[in-house]
Image (cartoon, rainbow, N blue to C red; front, top):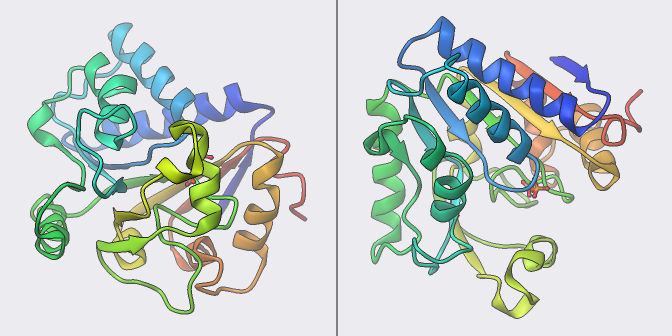
Length: 242
Ligand code: PGA
């Protein structure tokens, strides 16, 4: 495990973008796993700047997003489809046909999950998975549980996650109760993983994830078992680490 302590959020974002760019340069046609949320926004901004400065092209890149809410139409401002389009994809030269996000409106969610796994397999797997972490230690929407859920699946969101995400919806009641997420097995199969954490609210989850026991009650702790894990924390998020 490689832990990098960034001074602040801006440095974290630059380091994260540099790692994505390195992956893309070392493997033309790289397959990236991508998160939504506040944490990766700076990384996306950095990658967009690199593209605009002519330093990076996304033409041959394939992406798989981690998760999507269930029952939120693509065009809704809170869908992860919109998040990715507005914050990243519409600003770069990526082929939209190579971007994959679980379809939270599918009338056959089980089949959508199986199909998502087939698409990842067809792309020969994910080279670099970028993750955020929830205050409760979730990765994607893999919530604390008594067991690890394997592949892409439908999940009931934890109250803690619903409350954390209410800031985007205006109220707790409006946050969807279900989502589709890549599972722990799908994440652990990625060839390398980079997890990002910024701010005091993440310090406890990061400490437990990296220094605590490995348990599905703290889903991110399973990452300790991955053979190519990079952790980038800013000063606050890393403040409790030994
Ligand atoms: P955040 O979310 O980046 O908005 O803090 C991370 C997560 O919940 O996985």
